[in-house]
Length: 211
Image 1 (tube, helix red, strand yellow):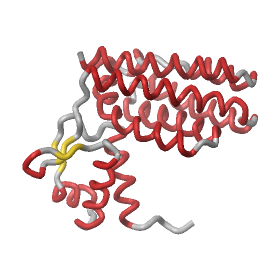
Image 2 (cartoon, rainbow, N blue to C red):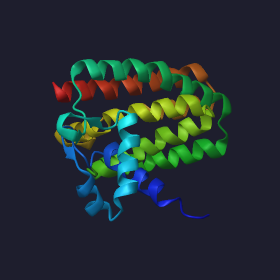
Image 3 (tube, helix red, strand yellow):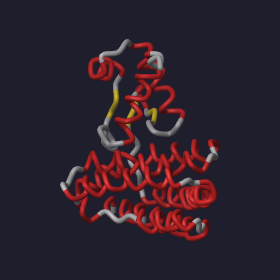
Image 4 (cartoon, one colour):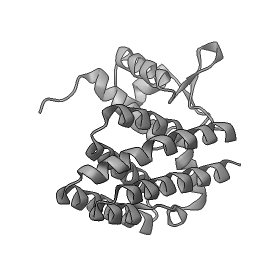
């Protein structure tokens, strides 16, 4: 499979930097800094920044400054409402479509997540937690909903990284085991309930950590 174009590679790398908290809330981002950090040209960096700003993952401030947004309580509440509206629906759809192979793959991802938690690996936790949700969303076969959800994750990713650093991985809640059980049983409503609980717990911890 051929490598994606350079501009897409740069966008994906910048996206990971935001999603997994390499860039902190309130941190300024410059074109020159990213050119040096990513070893990329100015044109693909500018394009990546433009896309990230349009998605709300970065914010344009005065004096041509670009920054990682800082979430306040109102923003967290809106993100919670949006996630609760969308992600349980994806879980419900996934429960109706998943195969034994899908469930096995999710279990493997969740096992890696558990190992990251046990060893206090914050980056590993963030990556495997996102991978679990992304794999579940792919099973749901709802690209419009999934794209909306991915945009929401970009908005709270940096703050989640901050909270992980404050509380440690062992104190991070998740309802993945409940969700996997529901998927195994083909119980769409239980899957939706587990996902809603997972979302509420996670966003509540972010809100408390940023208070």
